[in-house]
Image (cartoon, rainbow, N blue to C red; front, side, top):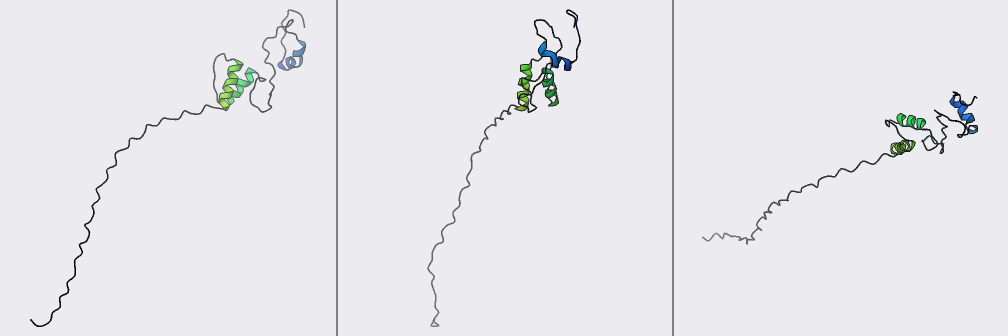
Length: 124
């Protein structure tokens, strides 16, 4: 390395030697960083790079545009994993129509009549 002369290296080389490049002496541009999965669960967290988080979101169908910070991307990850519950639809109370009762027709009680037995006697 020559001081003051830009040098292009691969990301793999950068990952291997990053610890030996103090930021007070070296200016590093375009470093993607190393993605580490803190939970080892495949879900983006603060150890992931912005590029990897963005790729994960796009694979899940979540879109974003423009300059987005890592914090905002992680917020989108949270929303993707836990979408907000849909707000319940307020139903209008049903208007109850008054119940019209039909009049009850009572049948007249049978009138008890005495049965008169007529006997014919043949005298007539």
